[in-house]
Image (cartoon, rainbow, N blue to C red; front, top):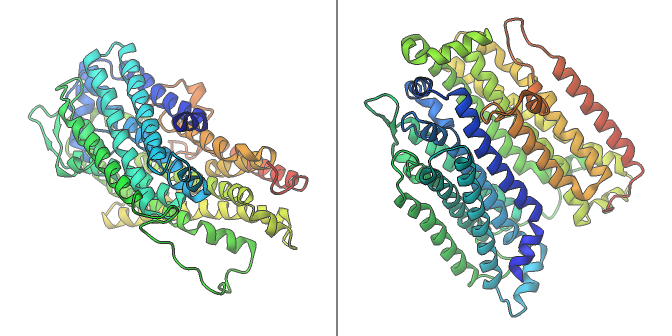
Length: 535
């Protein structure tokens, strides 16, 4: 019964995650076959990657050419990232969030007790990852890849997801809120991705210049363990014992802690609030900022880190193109086609990723307004002279300011790293312009969800994250998975101004600014006619 209840609650989210993983796997094989279909091209790209180890941070562990092995190199880490986030969000949703809402205590007072809901959540998560494994394997097989390697690649994706299912459940035991547990577990997925990347980049190249042996950081990452299966080249099954063992260990520790603590309690206790509010907490805007300060700081730190990495990587690739032209023919052709320097091109790519961070931060401002409304605190505020229009406008203003803050910190990090590395190219001055270029697209994900919040409050959270996810899939990964240009043009991230021989074309940027202004104005106008607290 509890398992069926979880299936019903997650039916649309689960379908979305599984479908997204399946489509990414299916389209990636077709894109690789179309773009890098012949052995010579694959060999050339692998030599570029190994000659520039920093590129491996965002790809995978190279194991030689071949359609299967090259596809695994290109896409497995992204599939594992999706499986990890799917699992952590699912784990927290049915553990700490249930305690926070008071439903877990009601269930524990029945014959189900405290362990049966945990068992139902584990079953739910394991089945979801088995489904993810199956769709990955079927997608690869459908594109005529080796069945044995395809099944192993799918199993590796699911095993990584199961390890993060355990990590998400354990995070729910430590953190007292679902937001805290989600932040910790989702961050650990990203840390595992980066550890794997640093381990791959610091690895030992093979004698053929097309394969890499990972360094030790990759061996402390569940995603790195999945890579060690060497699907399509070595087909090793034993590394799957590592992520599965980690998931089982986290589950055992979770059950041990849960058996000994009070329902609603956590190992990391929440801080005691002040007796009197600070003088700065004197308005609706200040309250909204205080409620979201933790997530805002987190997104800003992410932007700063992206900027620091941007400068270092751009300089490294420029150095390679100057000292190893034979190994970087493909990279040179790409740069010449764009009519810009390598540093400028990579700055634009990394600022696109920072734009995604800024969009997510802005979306959370609207989601927080919805959460305050659903929790019943917003009606108390708007019953004061504050009013509903001012209350909602403060959340929108905060979202816009956080977009600017994330992009400025990204630019500052990129500028510092470029200057420190001695880069004197045009990319140094371009970082501030590149930061401004991403603002119109990010504003779309503030204004459009705001309109959804006013018109259809219950759909704010699922529609907001779905729209952002689809936009990222099409605009950022569309080229990787071979999506048609007409589809990628749907994403706002496909229309951000980028440097070119004739300068920056801001046509798309102005259109997005106009759409954002109209949507935000419509949301505020319609808010006047809607009751706060309406469902």
